[in-house]
Length: 316
Image 1 (tube, one colour):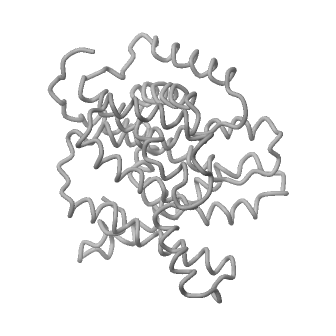
Image 2 (tube, helix red, strand yellow):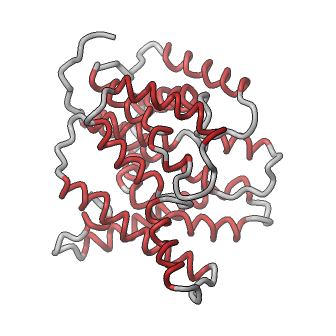
Image 3 (cartoon, rainbow, N blue to C red):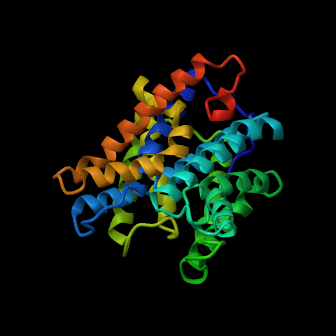
């Protein structure tokens, strides 16, 4: 590896590419969270593979952007922690009402609430992992983090309990490799653009080989996920770097709020579309509906934002 380069500023074009990547990563999250009834179908297998690239891409981009971030703890709280708590509380209340648990003991609900917000058994594990990655990466060398993460992923399937408070999803070392790789690519100015298409070709070959080697259901907790998701990232980066995609850019800019609120809407759409011959389209339908809701919500919030509350609601 060469010497550390001067950390380059993000150009407007690269910023648009990153927003587009976030939009596609969010679509991957929908693939991961949409229930599927016919697990023997080819579409389920394809969607399962597509569903494990979103979180790695989000973490890679977070690491990539972190080297130039000047956010204080206060700004971090306003942009991430406060929206996280607000929407996690809303979705928890929705979950309690949907599952008719309103009559449960208050102490049980309070315990479940804290677990829900922290991501023990909920989608919000990503934010817990992200914040820990941000803290750890400021203290430890990226190459050390990559090594520790590979060991953690290799061991987690067999030795880390699947249930309980500290799950494999809440183990930051199962994910920090992507954050560290993002920092390394930025720190050493490793080019992601590929004029001749060689990176795209090699990435396609890697993806094909991984799929051929993979046994069982695709999961984050398999070492094959690292080359698979990062190869997908390289391909998507180069495609978006060459083509202007205004819709994806705009979706990327609201992806944080889409992530925070989508889970129960996905459940409703799954119930509505399953059994009507629309199973193959329900992921895209859910994605479009949630994005449309968030776009409309953003317009309303910004229209009445004289107190600048939008930053507390996830709109940066």
